Image (cartoon, rainbow, N blue to C red; front, side, top):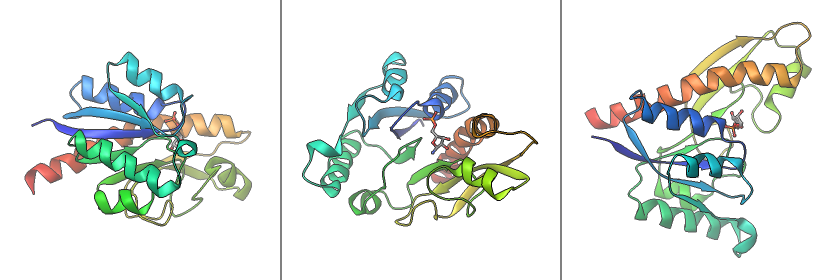
Amino acid sequence: MSHKIAVLVSGRGSNLQSIIDATRDGRLDATIAIVISNREDAAALNRAKDAGIETACVPPSRLPDRDSCDRAMVDLLRSRDVGLVCLAGYMQPVRRPMLEAFPDRILNIHPSLLPAFPGLHAQQQALEHGVKVAGATVHVVTAKIDAGPILAQACVPVLPGDTVDTLSARILVEEHRIYPETIARVLLKRTSA
Ligand code: GRF
């Protein structure tokens, strides 16, 4: 049975692409029913369109408040019968309407070994602290940012001379591997539950 999932994005969309690729080559038994962005200029929207996936944009500036924004997303997701929501570079806090509509069914990928370095500029924070190992984490989204239960992690070394760009690129390779893998595992668990 192919599950219906949604991906929420704000920017470049390389993680979205890794999920699209995994649905296409059989690693992930899921259909991306819709890709939603909070930004009209997100390059990720073009990746979705190129793949023939429905897109929608819910810019907070067009709505009275942030909760209305999340309510509009819930309506879209429910009408497409989405069972799992995957944040992929979605740079906006998830509010109560979404958390209540999809309890334990919203995932996120973060470019650090949580609980270290939550929030913005995780790779820069890692370099500033001089850590020798960095990485990526897939976790369940809760009301506290980047603090929900951890589902998967992957490590990369921090090398002498690393910049934010070189470290981010090394972490991104692991993000693209563990995110589709973890989504597949979560969906499989749901099927067998
Ligand atoms: C990734 O590093 C992801 O972990 C973080 O934002 C970045 C998004 O990149 N949440 P992309 O839009 O998936 O290319």
